[in-house]
Image 1: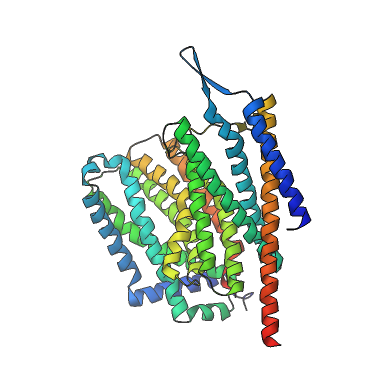
Image 2 (image 1 turned 180 degrees about the horizontal axis):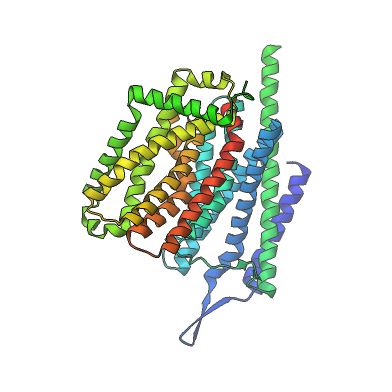
Length: 233
Length: 230
């Protein structure tokens, strides 16, 4: 493991642990009032994990599309690897979002699933990026694989906001809590602090995974190259 | 050469080629039409119980049929090109690459719209639906607007899927998630018209479909050169 990714991974892990500590011991518990009785919603604690995971996923998928476009523009192999690794990391986090999200909806809404804009968006996203990997594995030639992968990563990145906007049309009513709006975050003090620590921890951790994956892809290509050299020689 | 012949003429030449091929073989449009009607029969048998409530679910049924029918046609539209070596011919001809896209897309749009023009009245008859003339205009406009998006995304993705090992199998996997936003809006618009909702909501959905069309036309225009050139 390279030094840079090791530092990033440890910093991320430390921040994530600090985030968990802040979430459980410092941030106030979420309380709902039902008929003068106060109910503590402990399930809200997953928010400090679920939302950073979701935002990290979106960041990496957008990066995947961005590097995909860079690859098409320059045809530099390194951009293709950067795009592919970003989509891979993004996809892992998308699956984590689905798992943590489903656990939370079950605890808070009493159902495993609800056809709601955000949930629909993430389900479509999961299937769409699963399609990305199926597409790549179905193309034999390396250059075509890179080209189609890059093209689809751009199409998919464009489609994510569209799916979300479509979900807001009348047929599906949003019930997912909205914390961040244009007016700012609807939480303050310790809650916000716990969230931000988790958020940066998650981003650092994901970045370290990303760098490691990228190194692995490059190493694999070097080996392939050396193998060919040996065969020719 | 491409500088002398206008873009419109180049696009028209490709559309004409596809129409001529279809007129000679007549295999695509007729198969697509039969598929839609068969899908309606399947729906009537599968959902017989809720047919009384068709004002609310009818829009959805129609779109499921249209979506699967369009995939059938989109797959065919490039199988010929690829198998008969026609794609190489197209690539070698002095036509700007993005114009090849618009030519193929307009051909697909045309076939799709023709089939639907015949299928919609049959759908209304079979499921005992009624609609005033002014509403029918908005209804058909919604369908046509959605067709633009379907033909655009479909042409782009079927060019990709035809180059994979799994070919026909690959298109639905790529196409369906990308078309979902359009499907949501189209179902919402047609369903809204059928159940007599406020037109402002229908227009909202139609506006979304138009935005979707424009975005993916731009994306396809920018990307098609990379899709098609080796």
